[in-house]
Image (cartoon, rainbow, N blue to C red; front, side):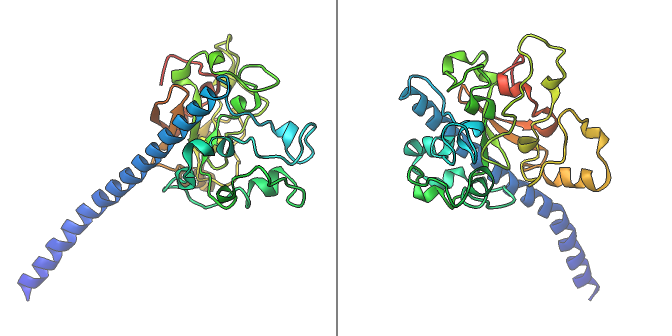
Length: 264
């Protein structure tokens, strides 16, 4: 009887040691899948630009959302729909570590355009109910990064190896359609603002004001933040030059919108 109890105790100890190892291994596998997805999507964006005079996919909330001034209730030029012919696999838009399965129909249609007036004619049908767990650099999408009233061109990207193109995100766009840091003033505090949708990609609402110090959050807010990090301590970031790299949440800053910095 004593021997049996000893065996059970040993098994319990071994299990306690191995279970975290197995959990970490599973998480690493999911993160690798996510990296693979982002690489494929980045390659698709590159192919899109090659076929469109080096212009990035362009969609401007103020022109094409509900009440937009030019093409209201149109989403067909959104990045994931624009690059789909180069992907041809809707599942690539899904991160295995994403906390929810919100789709274009469930989120963007309900919040960005009028569901009763939404133009579906140009949307790939398989994308309507597909979870899109990655966000596209919104200052690129709107032309803000290159200070243009139209699409940004690859040639206007000052630092492709440090400019965010796609990233883990709780919405299909990263946010910040009107604000980017100065590309000439290193003291501009906006450089260190956190891209909250990407840094905390599994938080389904944004309660962190731009510029707030993360250390200022405690209690329940801190718990929500920590549980909102998609991959253990940070997010996967895909850059304009094509490489994908993990970045800790506190380092997912507005600098990445314009490629301001020495490297990733």
